[in-house]
Length: 404
Image (cartoon, rainbow, N blue to C red; front, side):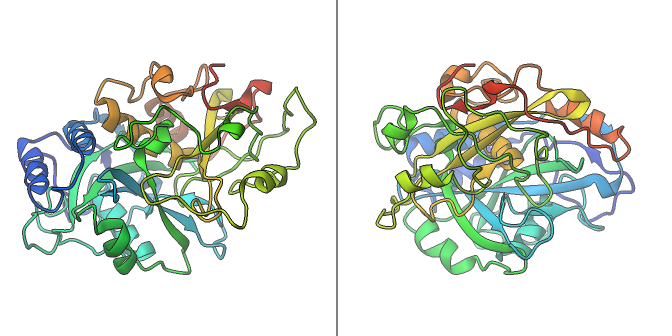
């Protein structure tokens, strides 16, 4: 069975991913007959693939102060497809203000193993997500009937990641058990209450949009939000630190490389395109798309990071103001891409591999980029050094579909 989060305090937490269990899949199938009955066929298949996933165990001991967790909260949007909940960090915060994050934070005494309670507790503190009961099974397979945790269903945990501050970050994936007709239009708006000291905005984006795919409910070819923009060379985003409170990315590069085909644009921020691009695409009269139909633009930059190895920083945003209050970048983007790949193609078909380029329209990893398990081992042996460097070459200005 997938291990339930235990209330016992561990002196030395270990990275042990929960194992798959038929009861978890049975709970999901029961939900399809109940609150998730309006899920599309594609969404049901994606959820089944995610729930079947078992991340390989990573045999690493690490100090408690190095552990954090983030919540990947999925829900059905009005199309009956999957969307993910994201936040914009408060500008009052000293670290990474105004940047996009998954709800999450540092491990605390009493949180137990696996990262589940850490992520849920932090989500409750940051955005008011109701906490489930801490019974033996409530965090693993929330009863879809009338238990206090009936609003959430545990799906899986991803392999651990490393933040720029060299924390070990455990992503856990949960599903909101609310009908497509209610989740994003009534339940989430009425239940989620942002803590203004920590969060400026809560927003939701389709999971498939992070693979540059349109909604499966609409038989469209792969498109971008604005075809005229998608066909132009992408403008390089300002290097950003930040994907989450505890899950950030390599810092500002030592120097910037300009696109070779034109003069360098004015430096944009991490949460918005350059002024010229903003003028072209963000009209005050632009109407936001309906929930579930958002199509994102994508750019990336390559940096040198630990051991002078490259790291590819992805950035996703929407050209209509307010759809993405802050761009989705760095480790937050990495985690959401991973979940999207897992749902779309299943275990062994793109998760943690470089062979999915043709499927998602962009190259996910830079050449020579370390995998996360290797990154964790290196990071834990660096004694506080961050090993950050500059951007790697002119090829860092990648646009959707480019195979550099």
